[in-house]
Length: 478
Image (cartoon, rainbow, N blue to C red; front, side, top):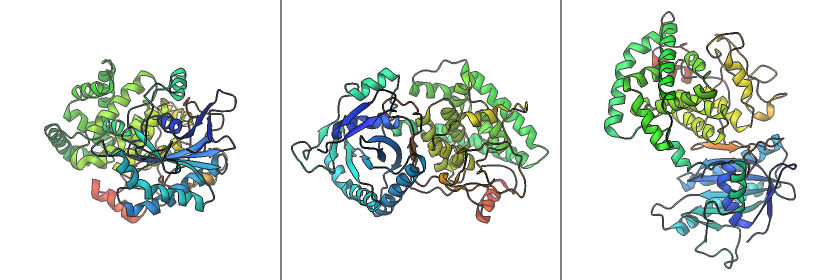
């Protein structure tokens, strides 16, 4: 078993030393804020004591043929992202998390993923950063890909510690940190309905609303009235949800679904496809209204069924924004990643996902959305700009403050961002201090694997907008 120490927490706070694979495996949910099932997680280590730094998560590619290129991309993303934030890592720890289909073949899963682990180790080594430990976590057990000693790392693996029985669990409990459920559980709260009858009825409601609402959104004279109607209905639904005390998560989601009719959900979902309406709705981000708004956005995301799956980008982005604004960074990353999965070119989700992953303070955007000019709505558009005034393709290119959020009005000749969503599935990066979840004085370097990068729109993208809602320039889907 590899003997090395991983110290967590800033220098002026209590530190916890993790010794060996068992404690590393136990620490993973506290590093991420949830159990990252079906994921590869990479964590940068800094200094002689191995302080945790930037980390990233990606869904494990299904096709083994993708493992080599993905490994190269992940290694480059983590190392370059860490260099931009707090210096080149001195080592990397890798976790491959995937349960077997039958729940009894963890060892077979470990062996199947061994080539992927080797590709990741080789990719990091090619960039002169050693992998100090690579673990497979499957079916409640863990295996080390780096330790050849069968006495401490037997073929059948070692059982994970019982929840709540370790030093890491005690430190998290003392700090008031709760580990969420699995990634799959978190995504299920935001995924479209799968019950055929309920999904069919909601789709019919969307089909009924579409012919009447979309032409009005495209009509410059009528779109303001649609926005007013959409926001008024959303406020009514938020108030309705706010008067109902939330129950435990699964029960609460079911109860919220019952409080909103199919026609109400359809009207708000379609109305939020207008960018300016969505930006005004983003102003409900704080206090009781923010929590009730989060429940509404989750409910609407679940109603984007069948062919309306792409429409979920708007409510998912709003859910991610409220989660981030209220301090739930793991929930924000999951919602924003799902928004980009629904529409990889959804600019607002791209910008928020990047800002959240870079460890930026959401307060600057909150100030913007509060409307310093007295407007009840949100900003016309939120953008990230470099000091030179143009979109930045890389976090390292940003000078001065990492993110400038400013109020701008749409202009026909202004460049608009387009992201290229790379990677197969949702990608997360975290900057919270391990074990405590508190931000350190200097945020950890956050690597993002193929996060969406602003660029220049193409004619194909513009035509895609025209095909969806009939003509260009509607301000939708951004």
